[in-house]
Image (cartoon, rainbow, N blue to C red):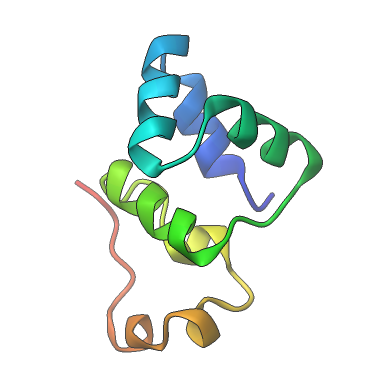
Length: 84
């Protein structure tokens, strides 16, 4: 599914770590949990923040697999990276 990587990442965190992650992304844990539960699509700015704060474990490509190249055309020239 679309958000499996993000869900998996959050499951590995304590509730406090989840809240801190969401805060660093510029959102709240409540919003992120609700959006994940209803299958909402995150906006571009939040996707960039999630990619940054997850240190690339969850990428913009993961969050927008069907239209990332339209939103972030600069990524088309970059190889898909697997974090170490």
